[in-house]
Amino acid sequence: DKKLVVITGTSSGLGKHTTKALLQAKDYHVIGAVRDLEKMKLVAELEGFDMERFTAMELDLASFESVKKFTEELEKFRGDRPIDRLVCNAAVYQPTLAYPKWTVDGHEQQLQINYLSHFLLTSKVMPMMTDSSDARVVMIGSVTGNDNTVGGGGVYPIADLKDLDGLELGCKKPIAMMDGYNFNGAKMYKDTKLALMMTSNMLHERFHRSTGIAFSSIYPGCIAESPLFREKRPWFRKYFPIFMKYITGGFVGEEEAGTRLFQVLHDVRCTKSGVYWSWNGGPREGRGMEAMEKGGQIVGAGGAGGGWESIFENDQSDKVLNKDLVQKLWQSTNEVTGAE
Ligand code: NDP
View (spheres, rainbow, N blue to C red):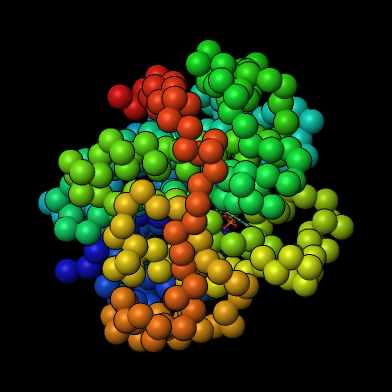
C-alpha cells in the first residue's frame, strides 16, 4: 500500500518538485493541499503528474474555515488508512509592503498563511497519523528564522518574537506582528519561519514519545529562482540568483531543493525526531535525482547516494531553543487558532 503524504502548496516551487520526486519513487500517494485547484490541474498536466497517485484538495491557508473543511475532506478520503507524512510547505513572502494585508480572520496574511493555519492544520492531522508505522511531520523553516547563521543573523531585519505581546493579544487587526511592534513585512516573514521551527521542537517534546511521530524542520537552501520572490523588485529578482550562486554559494535550484525535501520524507535516517535538517554545499547537479531513482537501495546506504550524504543535523539558534518563549508561543497560538 502507498504511503499517504499531505503537502501544502504543491502547485509551485518546492512543493511541486517534491511531489514530482515522490511520484517517481512510486511508494507514495500525494495529497496536494492547494488554494487554486484550476492552477493545480494545469501544473499537474504540464509536469506529467501520475494522477493515480496524486489527489488535489482545496486548502486556503488564509482562512481557518478552509483548514477545517480540508481536514474533513482528508478524513473522508483516507478512510481507515493513516496519513504518513505532513509537510507544511506553502508560504507567502511580502517584504516590501508598507502596510499589512489582512485575512478574512483578521490576521496579517503571512502570519496566518505561513504559520497560524499550519499550526491548526497540524493539530487536526496529527490524530490521523498515529496509526502509521513511520509518521513524519516536516515544517519548512528557513535560515532567516535561525539567527546563528549569516543568512539568518546578519541580514536586517532579524527574526525576533520578543515577548510575544502581539500574539498574546490575539494578533488581530490592527496588531500585525507577534511581538506587537510596528509592521515590517520582511521581519514578519522571518518571524513566521522562526515560529514554525519552534513549533516543530515543541511538537517533538510533547508528542514524539507518545505518538511515535517524527517532527522536524528543514532549510532546503536558498531557492533563488523560486516564485516566492515574485513580490521583490525586478532588479532584485534579476541579480539575486547570480549573487547567491557565485558569491555566497548558498544557491540551490528548485529541483535540487525538491530532492532535499524528498529525502527528509523518504530516507530512513530522517525518521529521527526533533531535528533541523540542512545540507552542506551548493547544487549537486542532479546527483540527488539519480540517487532517488535508485530508490530503496540508497536509503541508509551510507555514501552510495552521493548528494544524499550532504544532509546534516543543523544547530538551532538560542531563539529557536528558548523554552519559555516556546511555551508561550504554544499557548498563545492554541488560543488564537482555536486548535486545542
Ligand atoms: P512558491 O511561491 O513557489 O510556493 C509557495 C506555495 O504556497 C505555492 O504553491 C502557493 O500557491 C502556496 N500558497 C500561497 N498562499 C497560499 C494559501 N493562502 N493557501 C494555500 N497555499 C498557498 O515558493 P517556494 O516553493 O520557494 O516556497 C516553499 C517553501 O520554502 C516556503 O515555506 C518558503 O518559505 C520556503 N523557503 C523558500 C526558500 C527560497 O529560497 N525560496 C528558502 C527557504 C525556505 P500558488 O501556487 O497558488 O501560488
